[in-house]
Image (cartoon, rainbow, N blue to C red; front, side):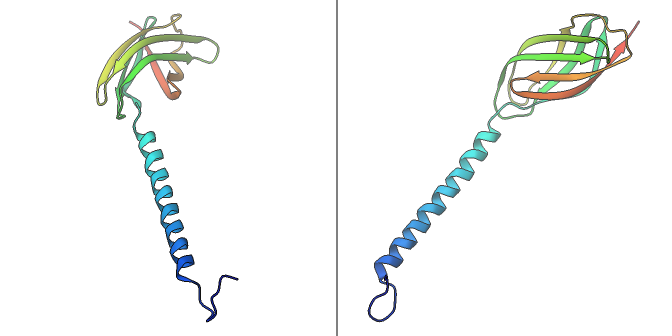
Length: 134
């Protein structure tokens, strides 16, 4: 059907297939680069050092290891198995910046260690906090 009288493919068909292939390869390369750049241009927080609770105040240090600034709420939910303690704070962190936080919890823990999560934006970090009595 696409063959000429001598049994070969006409040059125009070969040229069109080559152009279609190059356009497809370009679109695939653009998609991979675009999605990768979107994934890396965001704030990414990590907890550095320990997490300690004195009375009903949580002491924690967070660092922005991402490539965008984070401005928003950090929410903490901690539990000892039977009691749950919550707290939150508004912060602004530039890329590479770390900040010590003092977050007032909803109650005074009685257990020695609490486990829970730190939530910011759509991300969650698991944390463990030691209760210090004195």
